[in-house]
Length: 88
Image (cartoon, rainbow, N blue to C red):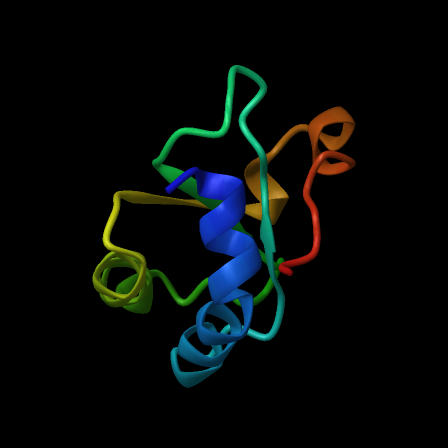
């Protein structure tokens, strides 16, 4: 399954899992070179409790069945933040 299809089909599960890890804002960052996994997700500023990110990543990978990369919103250049999309 393509990354965009995974995000569309599992968006609520992604949001629920993120909320259980204390993340209030999470979005999808479609890769510029295609929609193949890994799935790139962006957590909101202030939501990144670093010791929880690894647990969140592992939970998301179990949920989606593919690699997940988590980016911190405040570490992404401003011109790229516009590409972050809401979860389906």
